[in-house]
Amino acid sequence: MLENIQILYHSSIRINTEKIIYIDPFNICKENHDADIIMITHDHYDHYSEEDINKVKKSDTILVVPEKLERKLLKNEISQNQIVTVKPNEKYIVEGFKIETIPAYNINKKFHPKENNWVGYIIEVEKIRYYIAGDTDITEENRKINCDIALVPVGGTYTMDFKEAAKLINEIKPHIAIPIHYGSIVGTNEDANKFIKLLNDPIQGKILMNNKESK
Image (cartoon, rainbow, N blue to C red; front, top):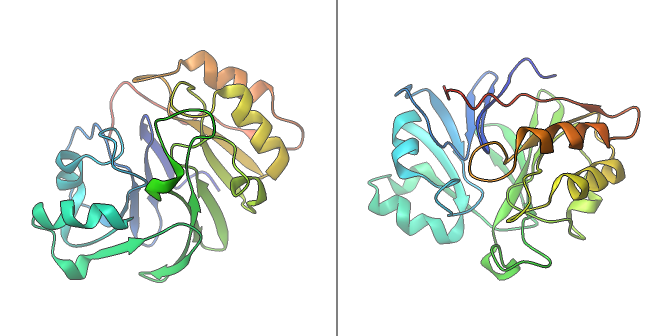
C-alpha cells in the first residue's frame, strides 16, 4: 500500500498510480511537469506555492483547491476548466477518483480558523482510502474518519503535535499512519519517531520523509 506514496518535503506528497497526484507541492527541485492532479489544502505558502505548482503541472493538469484559491489560480494563468473548487464535508469525482473533503482547522490556535473552509482530503485509489489531513488539530470531523492510510501533521505549533496526532490515529485506527509536517519549517525528526512509538497495535507507523532533496 506504500509503494506508490512519496513524502517529498514537509507536507508535499506524491501518489503514483494510473495518474500522478500531488498534494501541496512545495520545495520541488526539478521541473517534472508530470502532475495529472494537484490538490491543495489551504493557501499558506508551504502548501500553496505557485512556483512549485508550475514545476509539476502540465498543460492539462486538474487543480483541486478550496474555493477561495480559485482567483489566485486564474491570476496564475490556470484556465477555468482545469480548476475544481471544493468546500468541506463534500464528495467529488475528479478524473475518476473519489475524493472527500474533511474540514481542517485549529481548535486552540489562531493559524487555521474553521471559517476559512480549508480542507484535508480522503482520496480513494484502487479501493484504498488515503487521508491527507492538511493543517489541523483533532476535530469532531476527523475523529469520524474511515481510512486505510492516514498522513497526519506531527510538528506542533501550527497543527497537532506528535502526542495529539497519535491520539487521533489510535482513535480512527487506520492500517498505516505516516507523519508529515515536520523536519524543516516546524517539528523535528524525533517528533516523527515519538509519534510512531505511541501508536497502538496493530497500527503500523511508517516514516517516509526525506527532507534532503525533494523530487
